[in-house]
Every structure is written in structure tokens, then in C-alpha cells.
Image (cartoon, rainbow, N blue to C red; front, side):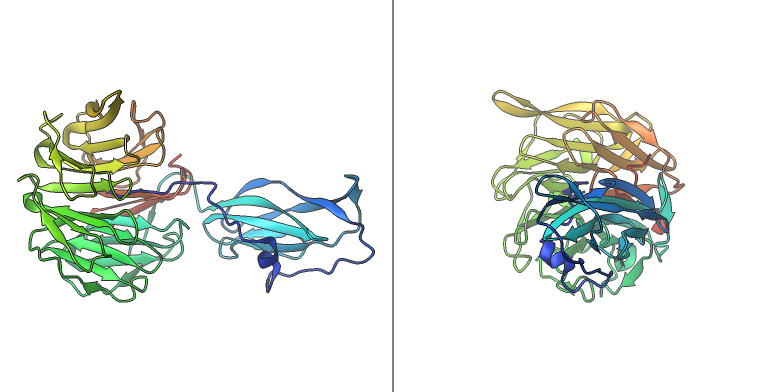
Length: 413
């Protein structure tokens, strides 16, 4: 699993001048004389559109006495023309999934409206361009650029929020089990045979790094551009502090580790077979085993959101959750339901999160109360789901067997 940066309000904040410089969306010249303005107001301030639909936005300019000025010609611009295109009259057209702003400016004043664009509600299938099992998924914060990895060295990539996926040449035939990007260009994929692949050009080319390991890796995560960890068979944890150029190995447990998550460069958890949970407070230089174990069931996924907050999921509905006490941090055992096996979990806040897996078919659960309770969503997947990623509370992707990818842009609702 992965650490997410969830933020529905993570919108473009470029300077107003930059927004209108070189804009190809069309502008109109303000006819003199125009009195000094105090503000511009765009209506509506917030809207949600389905791809292909249109919305007329309006703008009003106010003078320094807060009186509306008539006859003002506004310059209109879109924060991301790939999401919303806007005409020189403020008519917005939803082009592709995402969240952006529509700007209107006049007399040195600018206002904006936030627009969220989606394809359809609920979870729906995206064509992955592969039939190989997919085990890991990662998206950049823009919600448009993402990667999924799987068996036989499979790497698929999207630049349009998953509307289309294309294959990237990984140069390995090993099964890839986890993927993580530290920027739009630099990313890592980890898998069997001690494999860690790196790209420095957004996946156009991938190169195998020297890890000194032969054990199968099941997951990889990075806390920043330099610090990363991969975990796997025989309890191996490989750590890099120089963007993958060198790796050191430790074996805090003999149990296979399935997942790793760090909230920063210092605090991390890894989980695996037999319910093992290992933790570190020094960036992985040393690890301790949580005793006594909270469960004997295999734990397949862990997500650490902060130094005190973490959630895990596994077989037989096991859902360990950290609880902070005045003098310690302990794990308490929650439950997803005994018939549910959880393969992936992500928490975007202390309250809202998603878990995916199987109960004989693809399973997606959502919590809005910090994992006190979990409610099922319609997964639209007969295939098991192995990993999940969300970029904000609404937009997420889950991947699974047979190349299955399902997506929601409405929080699964």
C-alpha cells in the first residue's frame, strides 16, 4: 500500500497574470472607460460536470463603492484545459476527468470557480490493456497520471485518469508487486527476485537497480525523493537513503512481509504473515516486532498516515488499528467481516478510507468513522482486487487479477 496525499481542494493556485498570459482559450479587450475595480465575482463558485456537458459561467465586476459595473468585457481562462475548456464568453465544456478552476478577470481583478469533472458515478471498469494480474497502483496528485504493475513485468500507464492505459516496457519478466513515484519523472517498481526497477523519465524507460537481494519483494514505498523501503520474503526490508543508488538489508522477522508504509522519513510499519507487525522510529535503521501479536492471520496491507495513526488489513477480516495512549502506541483489533480478505487499504484522513480485496469476488469497503465501521460498495468486479489508491476523497482506482482496473470519481457512491 501507499501513502496518499488526499485533497479534493488541491487545486491550481498559479498567479492570475500567469493564468492569462499566452492563454489560447480566448480573451476580450476591456472597453474604456473602466472605473477602478474592487473585485470580480464568478457565478456559480462551485460546479460538478459530466464529461461532455457544458456550463455557462457569469462574472460581475464591482467598483470601489461595491457597485456592479455594466458593460465589462472579461478575460476567461481554464486552470487545466484538459479538464475544462472555456470560451471567451465563459461557456465551460467538460473535457476530461479532474478538478480545476475557471477564471475571469478584468481591470486587474480576478475571481474563479472550482469545477469537478467525472465520467460516471460509482465504480466502473477501465480497459487496462493487459490480462496479467495487477498488484500495485499509484497516481500522482493531479489524478491524471498513474501507473499499475503486475505479473510478467507488466507496467501500464495513463495520462488521462485511466480513460486509456498503455503498456510501458519494464525490461524485466519478474512479477512486479508494488509501485511508487516520487515525482512526475522518477518512479520505482519492486517485485520478485529482488527486483527494483527505476525510471527517471515517467516510465518511458526503466532500469533495474542493484539491491543485493534475491528475495521476492511484495511492496515498496518512499517518504521523499531519497528515502525508500522495499519488503518481502523471509522478512527482508531493503532501505535506501540515496534514491535507490544503494540499499541496505535487514531481517527483523522470519515471516514474509507483505506491505510497508511510512508517514515520514522516520516512522514506519510493515506487516505480513502470521499477523506480524514490525515498526521503526529511526527510518528503518532498526526495527522492533510488536508483541504480543494482535492476530495470527496474515496481514496484507498497512497504511501509516501519521506518527500515531495506522491501519492494517488482512485475512478473515482482520483490521488492526493503532491507538495512542498517554505513554505508548498500541494496536487494537478491529474487523472488516470474517468473510472478507483485505489486500489493500488507504486512509486519506483520520476518518475516511477505503479497503479492497475479495469475498469470492472483488470487494471494496469504505469507512467514514476512522475504521470503527466499514460499509460495502458496488465494486463491479468479479475479480479479486489487490491494491487501491486515492488522490482525494472522491477519485480512486483499484487493480486486481486478470488486469482488472476499476475507478471512481465520486467516492464510490
